Image (tube, rainbow over all chains, first blue to last red; front, side, top):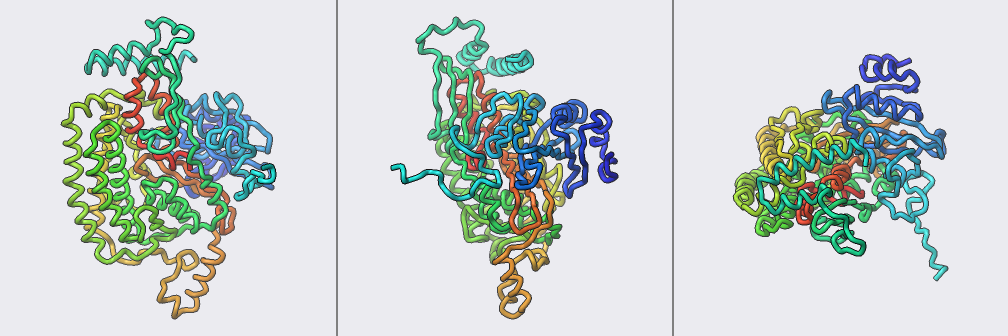
Length: 161
Length: 433
């Protein structure tokens, strides 16, 4: 059930009512409500948020790597409602090789952000229209923003020359 | 193409046509071209349909942006922006630095609005630390950020006008911008990479004579902004090349995440300074200019008006600047005063600790949104309780705005793509990070 701090939030209550399995955890962070959504429910939850709850734009999507902790990845969706002047953060926790549904069908603006998360974290988005690397070169190996990826060090070996 | 998408495209086309009809017959013809219905299919080997690679080194992309254009004659059928040429892994680097060491990196993200980036990051960390910022520091921040907005818009105006062929505006704009950069140099010692806004306040005490210096620049700006607007709005070439160009339905823009002057020129009154004020923006009296024409000219008007509003804010800041400390009272975060360090042992210890091991930030995360000259700028800072940020994510306005470029270029003439790209005012450092 929803904690008291978030229960008053009409958005959280509406999601909990329509999609009873969606909200895994909910809390009030310093800058607004944060809802943790079950990975398989993210697409219906986002659809609901956009269609009925007025979150007409997505500000950004990003990832956080908690390696070596499990579950490893945390996807963060920053939603914004112009109508209600409200912001909402959704969190989806993922295992290392676990794919997640793309929300491009809900907000077209999610396209590049999901590509970026794929590029830098290696999270796979199902049904994404064009899941390619966006910032790194197409033939790059590895996912730079993972915690086990080195900050320095070039993979090029001069011994081959 | 999905039917819904096709519908949207059709409405955009109809709207575009309605505008174009009032201009000239030649362009109307080209708009009919794009619906792609009347045209016979291109013969194999025909030179009418081809792919053109624009950039990554192209003067009008203002950086290293590559746009792959599929053309039918001079009409763009499809445009695909390719980014990443300036990707330097700033977000990864942030994770290896102490909290205070990230500030110089934020300068380099959007190198035309450094102070807004400094401010956004500082506010996010201050939120996690629950720091109270004294009024003088807040007002100084507002004043400098608004000067940054003017400086950034001047660059946009100069380069945008230069792209379309008005060369003298470019020189005037850079002349005025230099005056603003001199103010930044006066405050921080640097023209561009200022790093002046720090966690807990400002980097240095405001310099002697800042008040007169800024008043003097404002006098020039007030005259200058009107002059440049007149210079362009009474120029028939400028009007013909900007009116009715680069339109996209408002709901598509919101869906694609477009923010800032582009969205305001489409009639959406979205400005973070008003919607969720930070740094005592709520104490300032200013308007958020909007237009409904949603074309390149409307974006021009919105930005010109924004410069006037910024000047208005800076004037208010000059008149009502509160006195008092310019740094928060937080000895574990803010570097101590130099004099005190020589006389007080605690100050020396704090200084040593901050410099050698940084300061710990309570575990948690904060998403701080500010209004950069380009739109909604946000920093998402995740702390795991140590002195290094666990993750710093930069939600940069240029990245999201650029996403709309493909949709906006569909069906326009190749010459108009230059005007449209100029009106988006992206900074490639801001896109690629």
